[in-house]
Image (tube, rainbow over all chains, first blue to last red; front, side):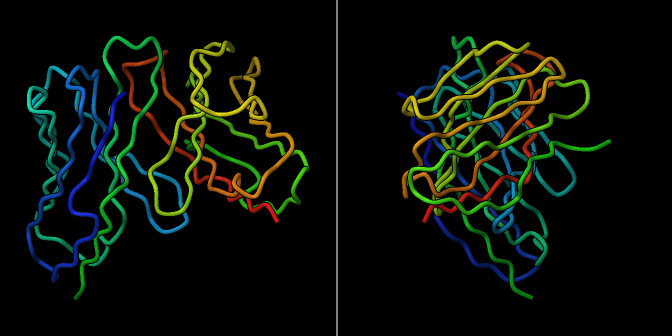
Length: 114
Length: 114
């Protein structure tokens, strides 16, 4: 059974810092990995999708890397801003599955203070 | 273009009642999935539908059921509500069939069972 873990559970940083969020998964045979952002009480916003054949994806100040063999992904946020404050979730789709079930971690709660 | 839309946004029900939640996918998307998110945890997979057929089911009791209509919209039904069913219910749509496409989520329906 796939299990996804995110570290740290919570992170508080001053504005302008570069930061790294970590995601690990127990079964490395994944199809893809997706990072999401969730504001309190709201739905999920897709940030980046990394296919299993890719090593990283970039969007603006965000960069996500994937190391399938070690079962790890990191989300790098450059020059953090107060508007980045949210919960960040990573999720994987297992390889060999015939449907797109996402298995989520519990998230990292990020607070960026001015 | 409109994103994934869910209705209602909030709902309060009494134990033992039945509830129907609705989801309209992004125009052109043919796959819809449902997730349950309890406070402080990552979303848990309930169902996936593609081209109006059930493609996957999570570890939820038979009180949970769903369907997808010819226009690709979907309903999630929950019978005999329990207090533990209180959660944020999220709908996600994908362009193609599973599992190789990016998932886009709606804002969710907050269900409170009293």
